[in-house]
Image (cartoon, rainbow, N blue to C red; front, side, top):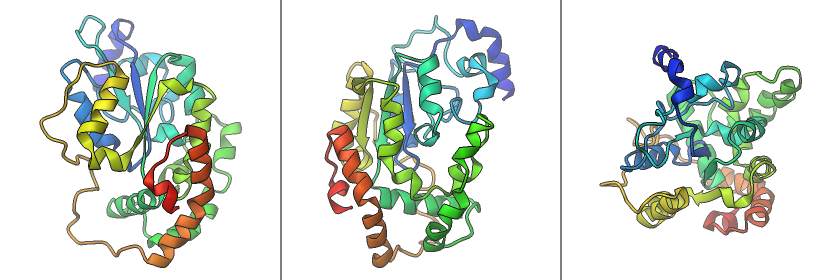
Length: 271
């Protein structure tokens, strides 16, 4: 934060981001940030998750701008990646107010696998002490009234929503509708997370083209997402019964997502 405070002295000389990676959490945003940040025509934000439109909005636009390069620095693009932007109810309208012409990228992972990865990650961090099925069962009570508090306090931190939204984060259609209410469809690139890792060369090329950059790819497409690397001990696998329960839960939201975006991912058919 000290470094940001120093850079705020030159905020008016700094660029606004040209692109935002808005989510989803546990969808590959860290890998994409690292890969795209290596492009010779890109200068990434000071840190990956600036979280301005969610956690730090009250600090003001000069604070946000301090995370980006000076205008005099040669770069075709600067960007940041904050996966909580997709989830937060006010992030889209806040972003459009400040950045009406920004481009948006969203990574969408199979919501069942995303939820399980979310739980594994937070369990390893010591944030979650319930097993996966118990956490899914406790989610409605944990999140009750959380977003409604924003009506009284627009800076309410939404701690429970950020931590325990295993199923909620996977209802992508609801979240993307908020962004498409603020931005035209052609400003949003939807990327299947499974394609990012399964077909990285082709998928990354499409991202680079959408961003308006010259063709380039990193030396290797390694998975750089913290928590997706093999842990010291293997977690218990998800039971087939629970997987099927979650598939059924996401069946209708995935159908709405398909209609909303006009895209067809393999996991949409299995949910």
